[in-house]
Image (tube, rainbow, N blue to C red; front, side, top):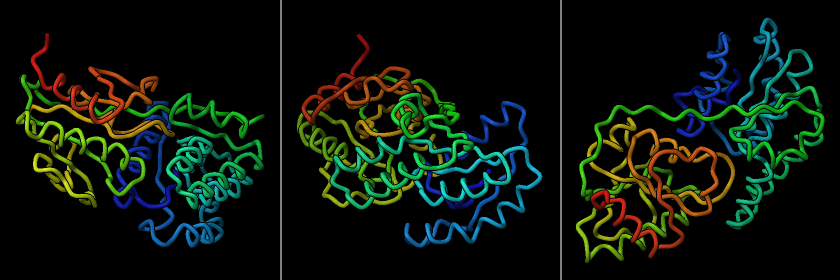
Length: 306
């Protein structure tokens, strides 16, 4: 399994996908050996793209005795180019994970023009490349959206795994709401603003406290009832004790890890209505559309079960 960096040096979402792929293969009797290209994910996207050629000979040599090579792509066009090059000598399974086209749409909606161009470039590469490459996705929805890119090519869905957290059941009423995420990422920013507005609406009328966990603090001012708690080394640290969860993601590509974590924790969680048809929604979930409806939803999640 070829990755851009070791699991220990990869972002949490990337590391989770690497682990899902490895587990899926091992459950089918495969022995999985990991081959990271570099010790860390370093340099700009442009520099990382230029370097893909430097790795081809080493990857071909290392993987010559294997039945299959799995290349973890995750929105990186240079990993797709590497996969095509290696596929000339050994069968390759390329994990796109998220739909290229859905990535492009989500970034266009957020007016992130450079990253939208990168996703569009990846889509063009996948459409124009060889048909011998097998492509995998995290959901049926992502695979359907990229159907036009994969005409004549084998496509497989490798689903995410819901983490199994050993936590005691919460005791109601609740007074703690948690959110985990990368608050610098465009995926979380609209939802985070909605959460903070909902927290302001609840600040005077309830004792509910909000706790944010992530690699860096949000760049916007937090209301008095919202606290940034820093990085959590384990999921249990976030979801332990009596709490409910807010998922800030909106409709986009892939499957938000926050949904899987909330479901695995056995906690009630609130999800934006744009994700209502997500095929991996499990457990006791609630839906919101704006700050006011989120405030009402939080009150409902925290209350005594009717």
